[in-house]
Image 1 (cartoon, rainbow, N blue to C red):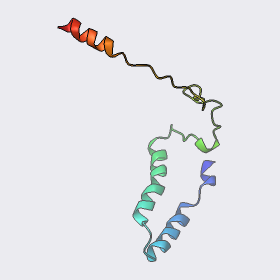
Image 2: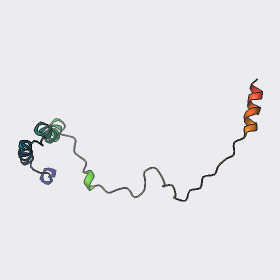
Image 3: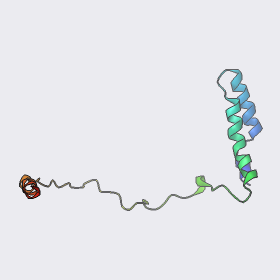
Image 4: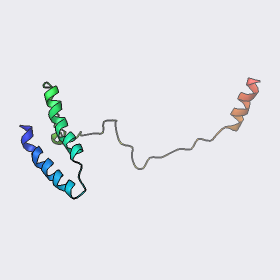
Length: 91
């Protein structure tokens, strides 16, 4: 069962309360985070969590090949004559 891999919630809350005594804890926020998953499972019994930490990474990039590091950029000259011809035709 997947819950066996997670730390005990009561232990985590106890440690967090101990930290709050020192002034660096957020008990209500931690409790909300720890109970959110339990509420989700109770409200949606037909939904299961995907074990993303166990999934293998893709063999290739999802958006095609990576660009090569020796890519060549060709500068194209601007034609100022072409711009003036277009303006003359618009008049």
